[in-house]
Image 1: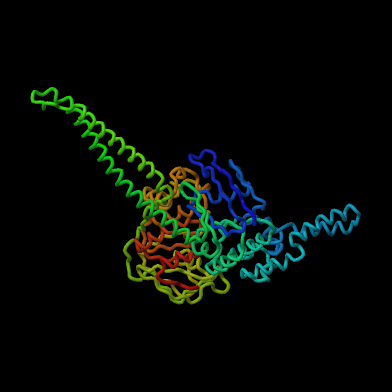
Image 2: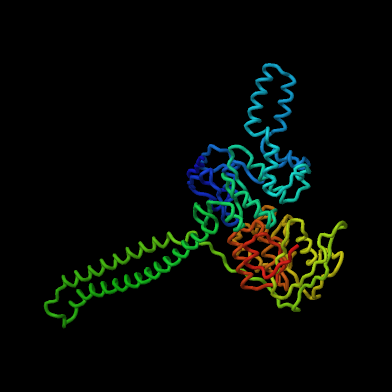
Length: 531
């Protein structure tokens, strides 16, 4: 066990109006399972890149352990998966070749060099590495036969699991795991989260609330104005954050009432003081001034009132100063709304023995379901079970190879694609191509915490989360009877996920969607299509 020391870390991107980090000081135990959370664009990946040394900021990062990053860089995906895993861990193949060549030479110098390489090979676990990889892969549900196949032929979930298995077999490395869930189905997320709960020494970036709850024992939150470290999982951090926010909101309201009351009292006392002070001299101008008028006493009373007025002003200033310390980390999320049209018929989709395939065995076989107005149907199943194929059938991009899929002729569908790589060029041109209201679209992006300065940037420069929000806002801005969404939450921050859930609850749109975030599915689905 050791400590990663971060001292007065500051970082800004060139031309940025605000720094990403400013004088951050943290001590992180290398045995922790640390979840890193924060809104899109807050600096989570920037923080990991600073730890890796890929970016240079001011301040110090001190660690006895090396940092390693997921996803790992893979040079040759044509190689068998076992070879790829070995290369991620250490240059075992190169070491073996070098040792073989040195043994053939057998000179004293060669044997000395052989000893150095053999020591590094043994220290990295080279003599048992194949068995170790197979054992870890098995714990993650990847069969041994998969290790013999070319890496590129494996499913996205299998690739994620094997990369994770490999980086955890590295010696004396603290691991930085960036968004591992986006290629994992629901079952895969459960398996990987349970597996991670048995490990230690990592930072995990994820927006999946259930996944974080199962996998981590500390939370590091990048807030609006500071960085917050707490022991516990995401749910315990969220509960504590909610309590703090509610306390600050109540305290702010109380202080505001006191400030308003003190303003009134200060003005009233000041008026009384002025009136008394004027009476001391004003009386001299009158013929009927009272005999024996004690101007000194009146002056003393005026001074006391003025002193009281200044005291009230100081109390008011103190409470205003105290108020400035509140609400700095309150996350503002304006309500979203669907442009849901009234359903043309009670039943919007009816599948009868629906079958689809690409020429071989059918991916979807004799599928039967109905979607009625107001339904929110989650399509569930393992990777490769045909979820996206079903979505494309509903969208009309594919045609059934058997059975039928009925929908009203006047049905309008609003879609949200899984893949956002097509987003290139100018945002305004994209809006025009979608035939949606530009003002509404931009307003929706702002509500999703999209900075105005990014509106004029080419979309290929957007982060994965920003691209997803562009597609999300486009779908919300399109009036439709049915909303068909394929993995809408990939790369979307947790607050925005909750914001979308609230919009669904308030707008009550009819939906067919694919999503692996268990909390989201449990909160909004009214029914399921299990593939």
